[in-house]
Length: 334
Image (tube, rainbow, N blue to C red; front, side, top):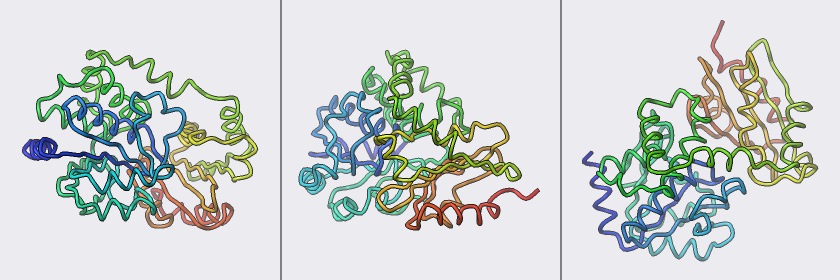
């Protein structure tokens, strides 16, 4: 509670507040950033949101999205905001490298006080105030809890509440992951009482598919799916050529790895996506299969026990070969 009020004090003293989040925005990073943005504006603070790169199209409906300065397209404005800020919020990431190589030095060199609010393992020591809770379902849940701790819940409205709902919904796989708690549901109930239309948020995220996106996902599941049934592992891969064939847009593979995890008998699912000379890897698991160490040890990544990410500079084929070679070391022994 004291820490929550210390952060509030920093907010009250700040002249310019900048909200940052990780590269490759998702529902939780966009939701937490814009929920905090709307709250700070309500409190008459001067605030900017600076992200490393643009959000995928399926998140463009979130009110305030047009206010985000992304470093990729507007590096000058982003650098200026980071340099002028006297308070920087670091949301949904636990170390500076997560904002990407281009933006990282400007974040690190910024003279502003920094506040981390995050739920990932092993937070780095680069912020003066830290709310880090790995048991929380999402960073959006932690934003809600912070607002509750400082007794400002009545400042939440349908707009800021919708952003919080978005982050909780997407980071919990629509409330199906073990990280969902009674507090998660209490928060959701409160947001609905405050006017959040949960069904519209679900439709905006999950029911706005393009034909190309559906075809790409169908191709991945019908033609590229491999199930290692003896060890309860499933994976699929998409090459850059295959992405281009289906006119890939950012966000088109979002949630695809969860569909693999939904196959009966599968306890670990992995999606390999080749883009711009690298292979991005998404890991999901359940039960007694934990993917964060596999991502950390072999694929320069990490994350949660059941949801992690990684990267590889090797070819798609060599990356998959490496995964198949080492995956058995990270599953429970019979």
